Amino acid sequence: MTADPTMARIGQGVELHHHQGEREAARELFAQIWDDIGGEQGDPLHVCVLAHSMADVQDDVDQELMWDLRALAAVGLVTDERVAQAGVPLSVAGLYPSLHLNLSECYRKLGDLDRAREHLQHARDGIGALGDDDYGRLIKGGLERLAEQLGEPV
Image (cartoon, rainbow, N blue to C red; front, side):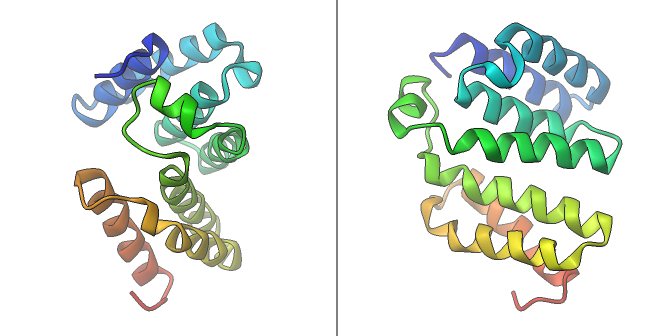
């Protein structure tokens, strides 16, 4: 459970999408939260996590890419202290592999395989920041699947 009310609301949207299959409802909730936090002017942690989550509920890959790029831009402004204060059980470094995995997947879908491979490598470079827990295994599994799709060694 997170100590940050905005992170809790984002978590509700993630629950709607991933566990209840309510993609449109999640997108609507994320849009409301985006407005509530002031969009890209909001707390960088909120912007990063919300944009990363919003990307997952897009139907258009260009929109997905736009949201993932917003998340990547915001993560550079997030501190480990802020992450801990929000009750997130990761370091800032632990956010990067997932961000780069999603960007790599977007570029793969768009046919920009050079950029896809570049972000796959960035994700792999940061994988050491992940624990051997469900989240870490999820990201590592995603990287392995993507590497196979890109014809890269697993």
